[in-house]
Image (cartoon, rainbow, N blue to C red; front, top):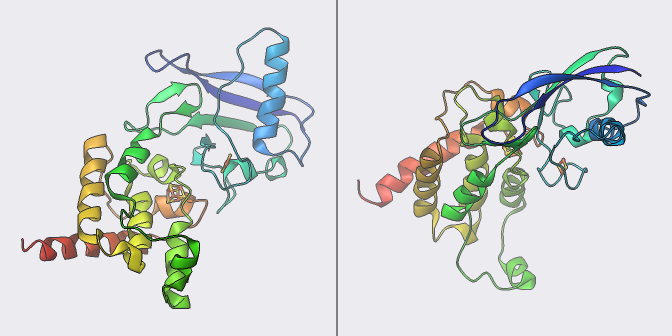
Length: 249
Ligand code: SF4
Ligand code: FES
């Protein structure tokens, strides 16, 4: 395959950026999208040019590092799939592909296609944890939790913190990400001690980081590689109302 790429190049956080044209030659349909970029980068390095900077780590759809907007869609055209698991057979020979970084005020661009997602870390640090002593794995397994409850918690825990939900949202809202963690911990007995405090702390932190609010558009759910449903956001809202009631407000 031969593909025409339009790639966002930006030398640093304060530099101005632009789309630059590259030709990706001899692309195998079995290559992953990131392997295709690796090949393009090898060609650029051979010519003495600056390689395209992009994030990746596991390349197995589990770490949440890869973060490319492909033809306007975070993680590209394959539903429920991270861009590292997207394969070139999804594209046509000769197609033009536009590749951009996540775009949100709270995710400033570091270089080219890499953004700073540490705002998510600060939201988790504000409340997305349990600070009670849960003991070791055998102690955790000794707490009786119904299959239905544990599966519900696991469905929310599947969030990999990639940030595609923010990139897809016209409000750059982090609600789907936050609601996944809040739902996971609100469902389990270990999460009950800080349940009321957690939701308020995480929402306050997200507001302070510059994420927007939710207007129920649903783009977040549509692009989420782990298919986290927006019903989690409804649960987060219920958790917030519950926290006000617990605080007697
Ligand atoms: S909710 Fe989905 S899109 Fe958002 S951070 Fe988690 S895995 Fe990524
Ligand atoms: S590189 Fe880990 S999820 Fe894509």
